[in-house]
Length: 117
Length: 473
Image (cartoon, rainbow over all chains, first blue to last red; front, side):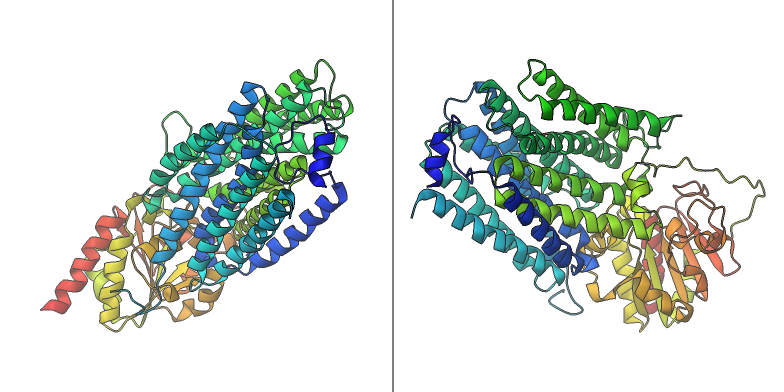
């Protein structure tokens, strides 16, 4: 059904959530996600604010989704593909370094007498 | 099940995992689970996107794979930097995030423009596109500059750069960008539209620079948090453009994280959020006008060690100086030796100590100091009068009593760690010059304060030797 809608547009569709645009739906999702985010983040221990930031670095690299969609489009002009590929590179850098360094930092947090030798 | 349904299902699970990932960060015990959950979420997101692309006949898969491989090759070493370099790494990472969002937005606009796709360029989409590239490119240059300042790159001025009419000219440029944006929304397919779009890109790149040059090192925690929020919001805008709920959700989570951290940092420096948003936070520092030369009392590490041995409670206040000197491992030695002698040792952590939120905690955790002994400012301040010794290591403004008493001080009203209420204070300081903000610190001139001049690492090392020597024989 969604795929049908796509082919009706002149846009050479390259999938990934490219359904019919539902502005209010999108805004609702944004509002709810922001509230969830605020509530969840408020409870993050202050000890962990640096790892939190590197974790959210990795999460914001979700831009990779858009980058893939742009890069993979068929019959797109070459420079569009190039822009998308650079964006994939940037996002992947953040995904890899963000998750790795977060884990590296978190491993260091130890409780009194807990395992630390 | 159609491919599109499968994609949406994968996205749905991915979103849930992202939320859980952040939820598990509430406690150091579960935090690592949060990372795994985040990795799972990202994997599903990529898998879902590739599924969708495959189903609708995408191409360039080898190129995409290549971009992934190159990104991973650069990302891996970036994760291995020493922990003192984490603020720079974080800023650099914001830059990459901003650039990715900006590039995708640019690609989308020129794609639609090239197709003369009136149906796609609705006012809502164009507004989202403009927001995406504005936030994306601003975050890009701003974060590069912030990373350069943190890394102390030579050609980037460390000191805040201010000039007359700074806010006015910034506002004028912003109004220009806004006008171009409005014109684009009204006529997205006009022949001049690509120029207007390009103009907005250039202005955004300029904003990033203009917003960061007036910032000094002490304001970096706030700035990094704000850039974090911008990077998230640009992902949200991309989600609106692509009508992708996963992008909207993940971006909003990132944005709210940056927002909360910025608010915490602002409160910890007694600055209003608006004050910071408009970039007025790099106030020129008023140099201590009073010419009266006060005298420091310096002391030897030997007597400092003796006093600390006798104490019941020693509170250590770390600051950026500890990070610069890489003194955390020596701090750990002193901590161990004092503990062995039955002294209670706690660390007092000010929210803006260091160059990013939580900076001190990570460094001390790296030195394997158990996190139960890292105490937040609000919790430890009640205990300060009971502290026999406060040892200040490379911290300055966060222990300056002028914040409580001196209405003319630039830091007046900022919550501080009440080091002056302890029975005795030892402060390690690199030189006799005033601290970063250029403000004299009254704490150093109190009767009960003794200075230990020198590099934090060297002084702590000496202190450790003195403590060890006396117990050993």
